[in-house]
Length: 131
Image (cartoon, rainbow, N blue to C red; front, side):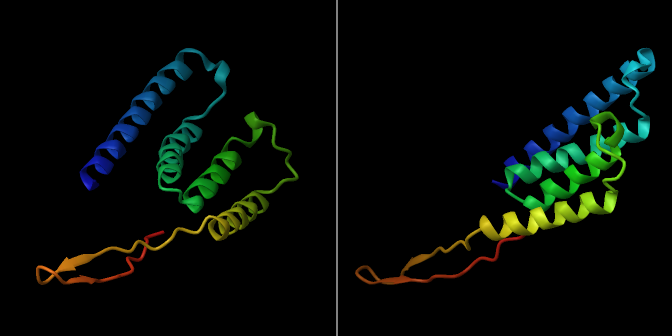
């Protein structure tokens, strides 16, 4: 299972890096986009984090990078100037906490061991989830 996760992670990062290279070339040829290289670098770093966090239902990994992207792309998105970056980050933190409380991950339980032919012993061990 871990090998599959690493493969998906590599594929996602590879696609985003290739896409970033294409956007840099397109932006150099067609400057109408008005995206700076700094904005592009932020998008390339934060977008795969959001996608990976969605796959693992990590709300902090979704809302915080999304807030950072909205701060970086405030002008193209039409976000008013009176909505300061700290307000956006505070809202993202509160959203992360709220969603994490509502959609709490349950601990995983496992284990059945057979010591003798007719006797079964069940061992229930909580595995803490990494958030």
